[in-house]
Image 1 (cartoon, rainbow, N blue to C red):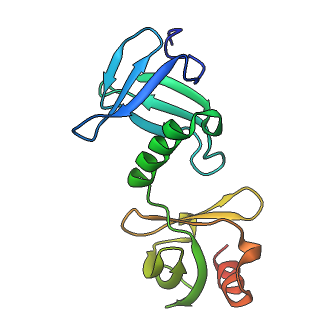
Image 2 (image 1 turned 120 degrees about the vertical axis):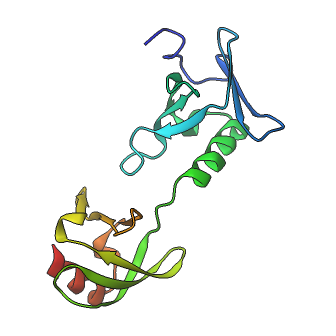
Length: 164
């Protein structure tokens, strides 16, 4: 990694704008212009506002950002909007029904984006995140998150317990 890619993320070291084509354009501290950079979170679930990389079209890191909240509001908002367009991780708020307690099973759930159904292929598609979080991989590659199992209603927790 070069010194240019390991720069501290301050307005003195880089500029970030969206061009007329809608692509992000990074001008780094050395004056190099990188058109079409893409923000990538290093730890999207455990530390979403930390450790962010701006990756160029060549797949190489153009800039590392330690803390998203330390950036000026305009740059932070630009990055958060870009990340929101790329990331789709619905949060399960309630499990309404499961077709069977063996797998594969069809789950009817309420998420932060509305009601939906998912197919759980096997118990191994449910991964623990920390003490009370879960990441559930559905059949078609969509991942769902339960941020805190303890916050779910009792019937939802009972259903989850049968699969864990």
